[in-house]
Image (cartoon, rainbow, N blue to C red):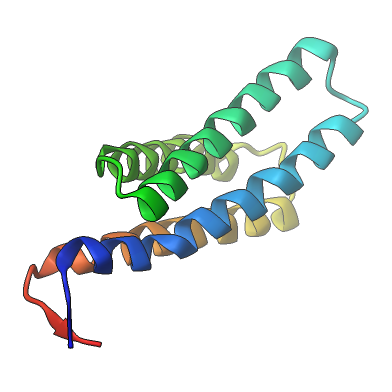
Length: 130
């Protein structure tokens, strides 16, 4: 039995959705419990969370309903772009300790891995056996 290209893409995108939801739902708790961040700072951080969760919802809709694949491309580009800017900023900031840098580097690399996994089937449009 052969699985078509779009079905393979959708199957490989599930980890990206799950990882995004896991990371950014946990970020809500961290933002709300942060004492050193004012209300505006918390609001802006929650907007970033909402954008990530919105992309996760769009990619989930694409997986389930087969809506246009642009959701996966947009969510992937946002995720990689965000972590390139934020991750490098964290690594370059001397005010962050080694543990903070290690955790955020791991989050960044895991995000890159699930984005790469989601796009893995695009490397070849050949059908593969189930």
